[in-house]
Length: 260
Length: 371
Image 1: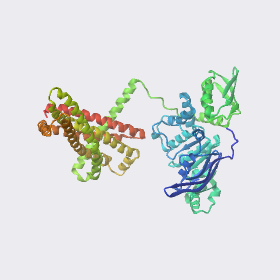
Image 2: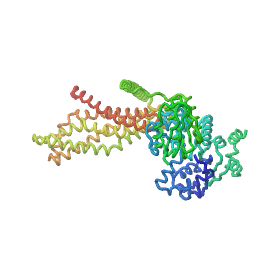
Image 3: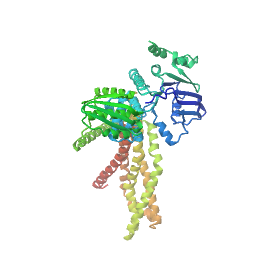
Image 4: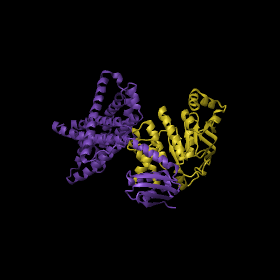
């Protein structure tokens, strides 16, 4: 992998506006993610974190504003251009979104079949690679999503997201619903992959431990806008929500862990 | 530049030059190169990555796997100017070796398949019997304790399975009896016995067609709806939630549906009988030129006291079969949305089969009883 893209802006959002039936979710939101950082998006329930993610992915056309992925405007791409960009990012959704009628291995093979035109022995071999990268045991391959525990399903979703060797990973609440030990293991896995594979990671999370452990920079959505910076910069903001979020009892426990 | 692999050296000192496009996009092509590597290499192999262009993870993994296969454990591998992830992948491979391998495939011989089928059927039959037993238990309790009749639920299901089915049942009963009357009158005309078309449709509609068609329509409409509704609740853990609150899903969801259908299907059958006779009568009048008084005369003669009841008596039995099979299939849904679709399909197919099978038994029974 080349190292020429250090510090390059991967995602640029300018003046994003999203309105639903009179309710303004985003009101001139700006956001920038640079190559090879782990960027956390936080915000209260209903502040449009998932909508922001869906807008960046091109799944939701914004009311107004400008969204760029790798310097190309989302929504103004040709089919071929979009197919090229799609292969450069991997996504995990909140509930895993694994296809229920396919086994874990078949879920992972799905993008490989579609974009790499691989045949059987190669598919097996690549699926095993993705499962191993996501830290799943080999016997998970033949299981159906319904047979997986919450932590395994999150890892299986990550395995599928890694199948096309993305440079950019979007994670929507990757540790929600996991016990603290599994969540911590997921954080370590993410940091490990991030350092080994030069990934850029954008994640939505409510998990303060994950935030403090993994994220280099965070963006807080407040009143439809985003204020971003390093954790310490953002936490120093006087805004009451930020104060409550970063200096509440739970946050103190998580920070104590990090500083200690 | 297209990918290439050059193997140099001999004896126990080999050098593998990896060059060209080894990116993830070119995975399919690079795997073809890998197939050219000869088997049975031994000694030391030095992989030289210096000429590889943007080597990806997948191709590197494929190379490591292939080297393992051709070396058979007797090959020591070194990497020179390798991308960082090669070491990462080797670490993954080492860790994978310590984990238990995937379960072996299940035996696939025809005997094994037959065995699994028998075990599955046996388990299914036992569960079905248990399910029917629970329904009977709930009904027995309900007889003693009238409060446990869920009247609002029963009326809702009568509305959904009965009242809203009236248009489609009427349409089908009307059209089918017109078709039968038409074909029958064509044949009877050959014998100059056109008047007997009235007997034909009366007996056919009242004894068999009215109730059987209605049951099949209801099996398709409501049997599937029962399975899908309860199955979706099962997927959403709503059934478990009810159980956890100390409520019996059989009492709450299954029995009201069965009672509702046992009430609705006979009523629908009466409606189907009436429209069937109307359709046949219209055809007899306009096509076979049988006057209305003549028609009424023959109709009265054809309806033996038992004809009407011979059809109607079957309706509650069919209704119970459809409702029990539909709700049972819904309760059987486990795990995935695919299972929901599968069980719904089984619900419709099985309930139609049971209805027709029961109809055959009734036919034999009525002949024996001269009913």
